[in-house]
Image (cartoon, rainbow, N blue to C red; front, side, top):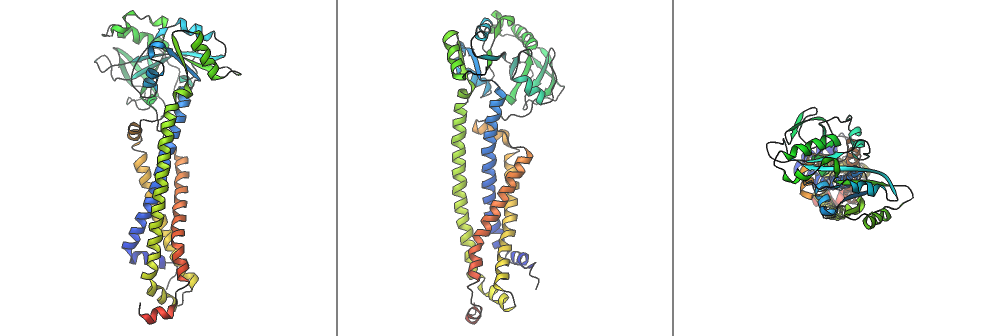
Length: 400
């Protein structure tokens, strides 16, 4: 009798019971890693959004209805536009506590024949920008020329491809890395390109722009607060002394997203805890019930010369094999369910969603496998203890 192969033979001989145990452990692993991936992806999405916005304060015209229109564009991915006189930029720049400052320009393309795809177009000034340019550089993009654009991650146009807005053909010179936010659906251009697009929109049935001079307007002003100043104080100062605009701290703008994320994360963690509790109880019950079912088998093995310790080791090895197989299947299913459908999950949740990179995912998978292995071993520990109490002679005499 080969002791080393006995656990595998036992699992094969009782394939139905083994399969049931593997399914339970698989559910343990699936709930654990799946929940961890969703929670971590939501947190990374929020962190990515904060980094991508890249400013302490965003100032928009009062006509933008305070934060609502800005959130629709940046957080909800709804194409839109609003403008204010460029003189506001100079007034804001003159206030105390302003460190870096730069303007952005919003323009929405349409489904009409003049545009390839309806998206949010965000313009920036390369001379002063400190939010978009670092992201372009990080993604390996180059400095933008006239009618050059950078596409968000979800824009399905090949690098160096062509894309048309208001009859103007633009060149997609690069794509940005994924952020897991609605900013992945935007297109970015420099100030000169935005001016040309606004002018071109005037001849494409956009009466709103007929009175707009691109040289005299901006959509928003982004600010990094200078060292030694509090963000809230600078926001209050702008709102008091610069009438006609609304300054908002980006952190407060994201507070609603953060609250929603926290709520969903708490629900997922609670569900993981409940599922694990139930499945652990099931594992303990199933493993312990096999003690009575396998008493005769254990007695025969004892008569054949197997010690109580060897018998317990065999049972624990069976449990470890079941846990590893079930855990591995659960890990694979979690990855298959989360990664390919991350965009769908993001849309359904309505929150930023950025899945972990491979190294981080591998660490989470390893932790999940370790925890499922421990759970299976603990669940079978009761059975191993029971084996030490088996009276071989009595069991055989009873004919069980």
